[in-house]
Amino acid sequence: MKIVLTDAKTVTKGDSDLSLKPLEEFGEVIVNELTAYEDIAETVRDADMIIVNKTPLNRETLRYAEHLRYIGLFATGYNNIDTAYCREKGITVCNAGSYSTNAVCQHTFSLILECLNRVGSYNAFVHEGGWKDSDTFSPFIYPLNEIAGKTLGIIGYGSIGRAVEKVALAFDMKTLKVKRHDEDDPSFVSLDTLLSRSDIVTVHCPLNDSSYRMINADAIAKMKDGAIFINTARGGVMDEQAVAQALKSGKLSYAGIDVLDTEPMARDCPLCGIENCIITPHIAWAPMETRIRLMGIVCDNIRAFLSGKPINVVN
Image (tube, rainbow, N blue to C red; front, side):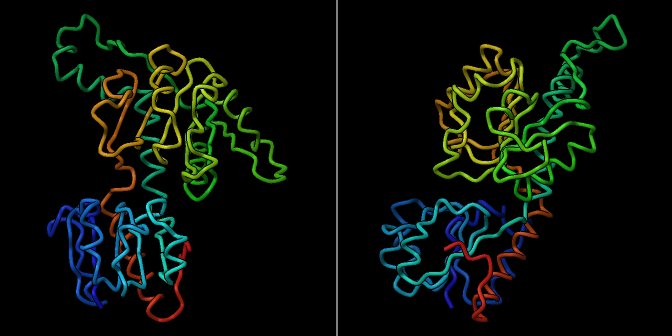
């Protein structure tokens, strides 16, 4: 069994970080740190299995992969895989669902609390000598706000959305979720109602045709003046230019962003350099414990496939 990893660098920094040795249980493992698009087809030509994070696998890049029968994802999202083509060719595609729920929830609140408490800004102020030069013991030079009592609008109510709500309630927040069915719970409302009533809007939905550019200029216009926007889902869910304009105008007081349309960040990203925009480089899912759990799920998926009873199949 020849197992090809196309972008191992996106899940581990090497031997001192997450080990790839568990995959050796299943056959010969060929590790490519990163693979340029034009090199993918040749790289996976002889693969029986491909284990991938974000490498695009489609009709063009899989055109030589005649032995390929399985694609395993180091991810929950699978928009980089042409699942229809894989189904046509009899290639099973399995993702790693729910491995990052706690990590993404934690990062979501890290961003929210940074917007409300400005810990990073105050830390920089102190280390740059500001507190030494202060004439008061408590120089509150950046605005601070309590989280209790705020209304959190949660777009996407899967495992991460539910975890986020649990933490929000522990913080004594109020929550709203987008109504999908005939829920009797009054906290399930229309998207427009959620946008208009939330102090903080956080996105946890997959990227698909219905969610693409969901947070655009029209959606932001429906939000409260001074609302906070958090995105730890996918960059394509938001219109970066619209978010940038809203931050500059004050319509949004802050944004906490972990994902962008183009990753790594494009040189001309409109959000770069905006003072009230906190950006982290798509690392909500990346704590060590989370990646160890991810490797376990990836290996379990392979075992299930080899036993003839595949799990977490997305095609």
